[in-house]
Image 1 (cartoon, rainbow, N blue to C red):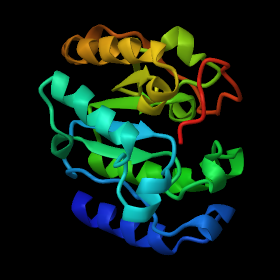
Image 2: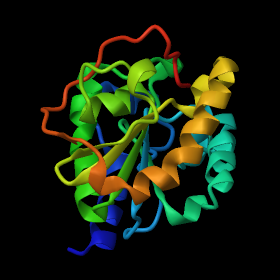
Image 3: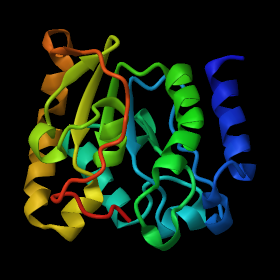
Length: 208
C-alpha cells in the first residue's frame, strides 16, 4: 500500500475500533488529517467535544489558536498533518490513560511511517512523552532535538494557553522560532531513547 492507502486504512479502522474503553464515549473517531507527503506533523493529545462531533482534529477554540500560530509563520493547516496520540475523545475531557496511549499508538505509528515527516511538533506533555520520556514540558518546550533522524520539537498544547494566558506568549514565541529550528535541523542534538509517558507536570493543564 502507498501512503494514501495506509492513511485511509487507519481512518477506517479508527472509526470502528474497540481496542480500548475510549470507544464507549466515541461519537466519531478522529484519526487526523493532512497530506500524505506532509513534511511537518503536529501531534496533540486527544479529541475534545468539537472534534468528537466533527471527526476532525483541532476544530474547537484550541484549533483556532493553532490556525493563528500556523498563519504567523506563513503556513496553512492544509500543508501539515495534524493528529493526536489517542483517536477517540476521553470521557469528561480527562487526560488519556497509559493503556489508551499504548493501544492507540498502533495507529499513530502507522501514520508516522506512512507520512515520514521531517519534523514532528508535539503539542502537550502526552505527545511529548512518546518521544521524550521523563522530560518536563516546562523545561524543554521550544527546543529541537533529533530522534532517529527526525526533528522533534516539543511545545505546549494550544489549549494550555487558553487556560493559562501567561502561556500564550510562550507558545507564540516557540512557533515563531519553528522555521529557524527546521532550517538548522542537522545541528540539533541526537536522542536515542525508548518512548514512555511522563506521568505529571504541574504546569500543563488538561488539554480538553
